[in-house]
Length: 88
Image (cartoon, rainbow, N blue to C red; front, side, top):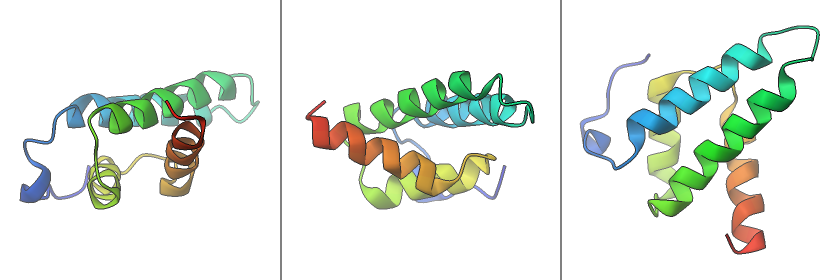
């Protein structure tokens, strides 16, 4: 975990978002690829959580930075954009 940003200290759902990304990182760390679909599902859940809580781009970026997961910020934002495009 990186240094906490006081601007998102009380951001609704932040702890769950960070847990989902760190859990996804565990699955992506499996080099065989057999766990990757579980990791992708968790990234999708994290993206949905951010959308549900109406987070701004910078809030997603800061929550991701604090968590410091293996999952890249781009992977998260791709799912956020996919969900937004679908209207969910």
